[in-house]
Length: 230
Image 1 (tube, helix red, strand yellow):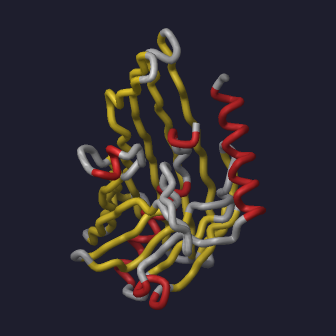
Image 2 (cartoon, helix red, strand yellow; image 1 turned 60 degrees about the horizontal axis):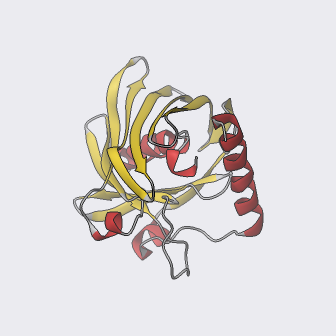
């Protein structure tokens, strides 16, 4: 199956999930109760397009590549995405990319190069920070095959930790691939982004500096064409 077909299936799967389940991702009570809920519309599927978010508008691009050598012996995944988000008086830009490499011998699969996703942000034309998400290795979650990830986002000197979410609200079982991400400040959850379905949902904290960092991280994670779905 070539990459174009896989991307089409991934998009159709997202549409199916959006149509059959409105369940949000599982979130800590302090996030669900204290955050403002803001949808990102227009960034669901497709390689490029326009989106609306938090009273502003933007444009995005995304892409993914799968290089197989003696398929499926060695498979390399890579991808990139960009976004520009404009609101009155300010603009935010992001340029992102990821890498991953798998080795498959019979029934044995080895992650030779763990997933890593990084972005650089610009604010009004100047460097403003970035994001880094990496696959968690050597944990119970990783041993069970779940694509658990952790990292951080930094914008204008404000840094928040990020961890992947693998459960829907009220669901007992975790999914392998991330359904969303949680943002934390000093170990306390302050926000999140729900990536389940074609409309992404941001749970934005009331503190202005943290709010802007959650915006940047959420847009960067929403534009990702995740190799876990390919």
